[in-house]
Length: 269
Figure 1: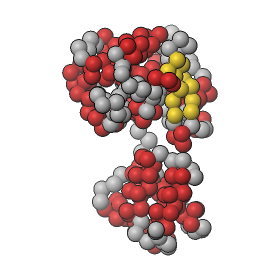
Figure 2 (figure 1 turned 180 degrees about the horizontal axis):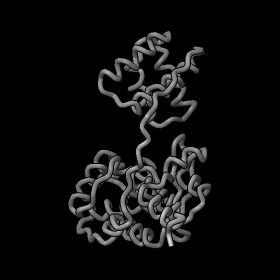
Figure 3 (figure 1 turned 90 degrees about the vertical axis):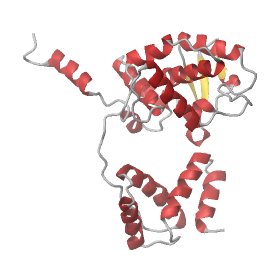
Figure 4 (figure 1 turned 45 degrees about the vertical axis):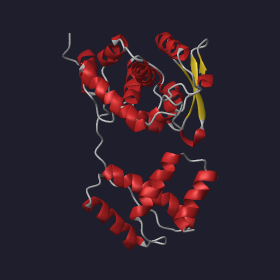
């Protein structure tokens, strides 16, 4: 067993990381050939990644993984992350969500897709959290849902009366424990959901934002702050360990700034 494999094994069984995190580490170590790299070898990795066309954000993901490995291996080396352009987070407009609500699906698969979209927008969950949801985690009486986030940490999130109506209808025709199951009862694949959401956006004439599934989470957070929601409660709903992580989701866009400026400008009547 290589040191890379031992590191991932300990992370998986002692750190309780997800399968996606395991895949992420495996991807990172494909670039790091040497198990005991020196500073020159680490710089060479970055050069090769950039020459291959990887973005600074992707490179920083590699650096995070490698720094964890270096610390675990007892190395004194630590790689500095690259500077990244801070882009305005992509979101769905409030009108877009209303379009999804008004849509009248005709098949069970379409109804399931509608509930997925509305649940993402209403709870701010990650798609991975939603696809692992079971009916035992859904409290329709108290309007609460319990999800398992990163590190298998549980958190309970409230949801709306509108979403309860859709969840109740879906539950009536469900035969399996998973809320969003395939025909054989297995969990849906993230890529399949992404494909279906993009197709639905095209059908309903909704502009597809970048990171189409995660954009629902961005939209939830931005709308929450616009409606004067507490950043601390938002942090809890999103499952962030620090408030700094939550701040990325509450950057106001140009329209917000323009509207605020009209209210506070010395020249405004």
